Length: 428
Image (cartoon, rainbow, N blue to C red; front, top):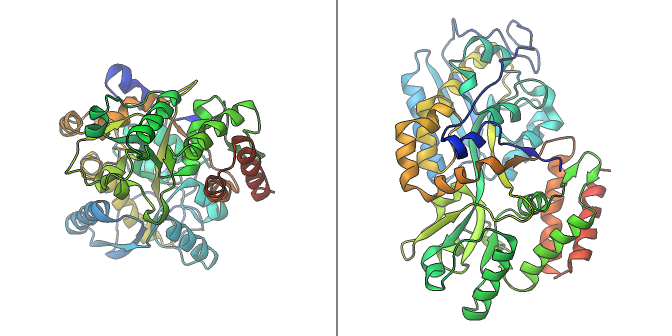
């Protein structure tokens, strides 16, 4: 299996209660004078920053947006340089991705933006290298989780700072599960058995999945298969067929359903229209569960355990020397121990620093928060999908095709062929 497991910095917590973070700082960019050359950074010094406005595009909503606004307001009030960060909500992640691509082509990118790595391939030359800033003006880069440091340097330079990091977990109606004598699933077989029981005894769908491509990705890894590479689909094999038989069986037997116009399962789950769902750990803040006890568990596995590591990073695009320095001040603040701790506790995302995870404040929070507990219980099994030219488009093709094969109630073999073709056609 060629998955990129994000366990190096986080797996230790499962065994030792701490998160390891190690690795050398790197510098591979040249210092430039203002305005900076495209894709390069200015000298990583904050001397002489002039008051300015820095624009930050994001896709946060509800509690996430409230906390982001509060932290940004704090930075704007407390920084000594007269820097004002202006938050601009661009809607959904798809909206943000589309606008970044269009503005990259027009050379009108914002100073900062949330972004996934697989968005950046099309305009990677416009991303500011942060190596000099990290090397010369960061308090302790080794304190950033190693997995996140690896992720944000996969292009050969530091292309971002980690921000809203999460993992996928299994949310379930614990009150209902207890009533039926059920425990959270640990295996694929458990998930199927739970589906059968709810279907037979309650005529209730037992499973929703927010991200169908992510579910396919994790399921393939759980079965010892690969997902997608530059060469195309990597699961046109026996393990891929076994995985698709499992997934299509869940949907075709009525144990699982698509989300439809709700977009995310937090609402139908809160309304008790499904007994459980798999979604981002940050989804907990969107779930209303006044009428039942919320249960949260790690993802079930099969031959192996595997859990999606998700979430965006903050990327710098500004080509103005002064704004680059100002934007870096904001990035330092947002990835500080205090800020990432507050962010994690209030939003359900994971802290990006070891010191934040180990802090007394976050440890107390974990004692009472089932989502944080479930997230870290599977930390040794985190994985991320490496980005490459066309990886975002291929993943979007999977989402579209997954919905189609589910609606058409295709068998596993047919669904496998259709998915492989959709991926390979996209990457041609």
